[in-house]
Length: 640
Image (cartoon, rainbow, N blue to C red; front, side, top):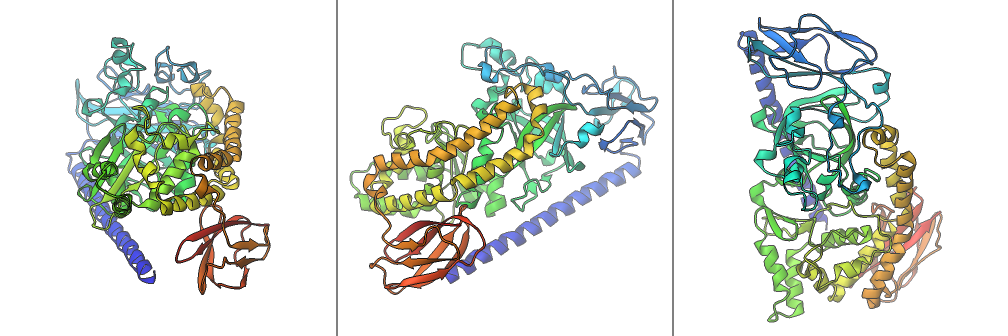
């Protein structure tokens, strides 16, 4: 155990050093690029436009002066359009005030069909929406544009001082997003050409032809921390039909900046990201706006990869676009960041009613799944092969998260599985897509997870085969049961869920009136608050349904009691541990809090009552794990 920890610490130190070297190289390259740009400008070859005021937040009116290091004409727009030869020539300072921002035109464009279900059908804003002042300027030599487009943005007035969330501001060619033929954000021609298929639209198209170049500014604590070009495309599956779409952003070396360089996520140390997602919260978009992020937050202390999340506001060409969840994306760059693995070092499968090879190959995984049906192998032989190939503890955590969530769109869909090519690596699952969780409190998820005759969607036979086989193995079933009881008492305890919901809701609560005015979903702030109360009510009842269903399908394992005793319960400053007679000699124990964090450990003696002072300050529900050579016991107790 000691050696294992030393090896683990050494790997973490190695990864950290490699990351620091990698980041230093990136900063050096970027510094050199900037230096070269400055030299080009000084030498007269660079053409640029400067503003008298930096982009950002201002309490009151300002007059903007534009200038250039050339004799070329400056033409500019203030309505979000790209500057053309038809735009006015800059001749005098431009006055920007709180009440003279251009009319919001993009927010009047329908972004899903009028035939969409009313619960998420697009409608125009009820009243005026927030607008920043965006000036787009370019240099012209006669009728010819001879420079890039420069973007300057100003948030003017006290109302912007009220905003506490970070802001991602996106500057686009409006036709790229909203034109009938090629706009990626609208139903457009694709819908009109084939409106009999469920919710078609331009936004369902994928591939190079449906990627768009945008410019981005990111403001954190009202300071500009990022300004660069990026590639944008619509992200997600069925959630593309929501009026507000998820947008995937990719940093590209060919666009001038290879990474998004900022500490976007407080719970992660990495600051260099190749891809980010401005996520609309999926099918939960019109309900709470943080449901998927809630489950990822709950699982952040478990043995599973998860996506960090930061709530932010999106502005498009200066128009308020509402609350989005800025998220990491699972891809080759994610695994490089957190596991120091190149794409050639991993197999990464995206399961969407088939095994899709995102990176590497699914061949070994599919062979393992098919091996379960092999009549030539005994169950013991099959289990040994699976135990070598699969990280069973990680699989259990992922499976329980889906069971507890009570969603429907799994196990044949929305599943991500990966491994490295290291000889000791095992298949692992990542937390993914919980937009339909926390909705059906009495959902029989074990019926869903054990079907051997499921439909093509969402749980065909091959997608439940691994779990069904593993639960025929007594040792695995015990392992699953113990983890289930532990997670229900800690990760999915009412206290932990309530605390996590409150923390996520608090971040966006003050922004909800503007969000609702912009999109008319949910109907009002009261409905939003009721949706949050419903999440807590779900947590209050879901545990009993999960245990009841588990007992129904696996009764002999669920009813197996713990044989050791922990008392008094509730406890105050100490507990007594009385071990079952099967224990011999010294026995180790570990106490975990409600989020699965270890708070105390030690050893006790068999064949006696052990007095154990509680050496931690927390109160609440705890789980004590007793390690025996034969098995483990987990016993819950409360400290008051």
